[in-house]
Length: 299
Length: 274
Image 1 (cartoon, chains in turn orange, red):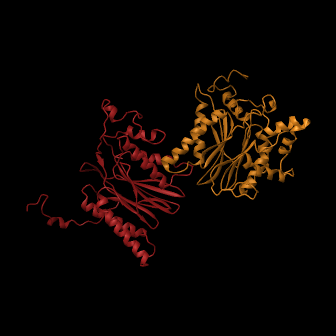
Image 2 (image 1 turned 90 degrees about the vertical axis):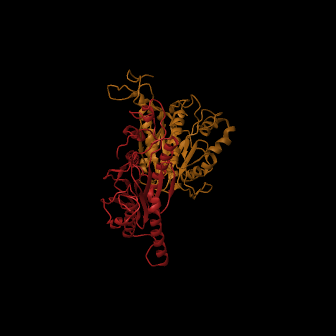
Image 3 (image 1 turned 90 degrees about the horizontal axis):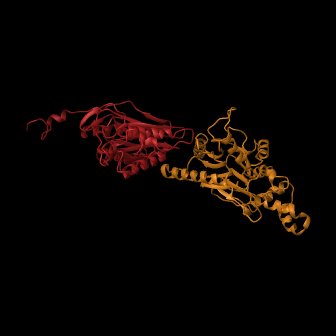
């Protein structure tokens, strides 16, 4: 799918002053499934939409813990993400060894950005095909950063990356004034609402395809939600996510138990089967979701 | 710092050159001594230019460090205007200062520490101390020690810090510290003053259990004077660094009043006849 003659390597500018290889790398991020991040004065959260390649496959992990105080959500090439997160883990341990302190979040993000930038400028290298949302806390409080394969890192109050992330961004922008003083529960609900907006028409958030990562002490008023006194990075998957999804449905006036379960039960009924099966798995069966631009290699 | 035959400037630049701040013998344009000696690994080193004792004392508002201005070349008082107190950083939350006993590679160490004070949260004294001890121990493990003994004083979030690191990577922390000759001559004096003040504070004779700025200065000046009398490698010209929450303040060089008339009556060595 070559667009022109100036995208053969990443060191050649196009006459418009653009580096096409770098832009293609950013395209890889856009093809990955969505990730949303928000930050308040006390907490930072990440919410991601997991994909599976089919009904027989498990859902691809989207969150990676780096250290007790830092974690990332990925969108793009999972294998590139593993290389970068490995590097981040090394940096985190190095900081603990050498300076006896957890690495400042801004510094670790800057380090991978610098590394990614070098790949956009050297002949024979390729940019990373992955974007991160990084949450973490340090002595200056909780933080949310975006890392992009162009070698750019920015700090955000709320941000989203990945497929259809513009819809999530629209939601996040509409409510931007609220996050700073949010409780953890509120922050997660905002996140779920934003994540929900990235879904295709016939899809819903389920406990299988949603994961939530939290930084900051967990005190929740939602029944069944996990609480922890520690403020460390932790990921909620499967059953642990359900209380939050329930709460989301309750607020939206939908049946709290969730349509998914009903639909799963209804799978015996012939007419409902197709749509329901798709919704339950988050449906990224090859060929079934070309509208989303899913590529199997990605996540 | 003063030049030394055994440490050319290029080996000093090796310290800041690599990722972790550790010395990399293979880097640096000039190569190190081992390379210059035709591939023979030169293990032992001796410092040619040396400084003498440094002192440290925790007081009510922070920490004080003292060191004289001399860098000796053997027994020759070669460089008489060397500042051996190195302010490392002072930010809103923390400030640190380094006192160095022997002058090697310290410029690069402090440069390295400065470089870490960018707009990310800066290193507190405890973190700088950890870095220094790792650096010193790594170098001694390569049989290429940084021939030095250092006191690091600092304050962060109202908490004072005073620690010692030397060329072997030996570390310890105490409210009063002294390196070299000072650990024999000055440390007992510092401890005595410190403990006396603690007692006075406990019994209510004086407010607080730590010395005031004036008291601490007086004790350090007294110690520097004793060291000048007894330590042949010292100079009656010294500076005191005061590290408080407000930052690092390094005094101008000062001298102690000394009295040498008693020397006339000394017998047993020197030029006099019995």
